[in-house]
Length: 307
Ligand SMILES: [Fe+2]
Ligand SMILES: [Fe+2]
Image (cartoon, helix red, strand yellow):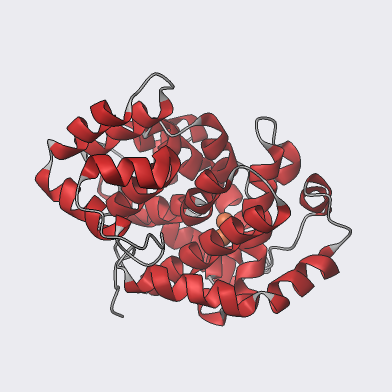
């Protein structure tokens, strides 16, 4: 009987191929799955025939979810002047897109929160929020109609890293060691160990969550905007915001995105002349972007991870 390397779990003897990683990402029961009701609500939001009242009924069936939705709907981030006291009203005021944004954010608060020497959870969340905020504001200012999804795209773009850290610890350790000890970037180290990257892993989780295809694409292609097919603008917005995030907040500088640079294809998808225009945009909008970030942090959209 061959039982080689059994105690090492995820060693290369497991023949961990991208297909196997995908299967594991999509079937691990305790993945940071969205709470059942939240998942149903997200599916309802995506269905054009869903009415606000049927959606309200579904959310109201979960007391904790109702309380959280109302708390966030009443936060300054959405800027509604009067108190929103019912879920039905929250849906009408906020709209389906913002609701989905809220639900996904709520779900993330309780998941993906593990910290170790190999993974700085605080920097991970700073980076996710800063990227989401920049992407959202950039979308609005450039006049793209994808702003409802773009915050979520920015927020989730690197969730594959968190999945690898949590569910593929042996591989993750090797990837970090390789990227720290060699000239390889984190992405190259991922390729060498897994033959895939955190971008694809995140995209597989997005599929598992039944997020819309173009949102999954924004996650999968955030380092390769030239490969976008479904929504090139959304992918380009997330890509640019990802690269620009360190310009706003050096705390959001994450090991796994080191060496990543602006892809000219993303700039052309957004009809931008060059990287200079984008840097200028961020510099001149620094104050409003920082205010948005503070608001999201303050309303508890994100977990406070202590080091
Ligand atoms: Fe990334
Ligand atoms: Fe990133």
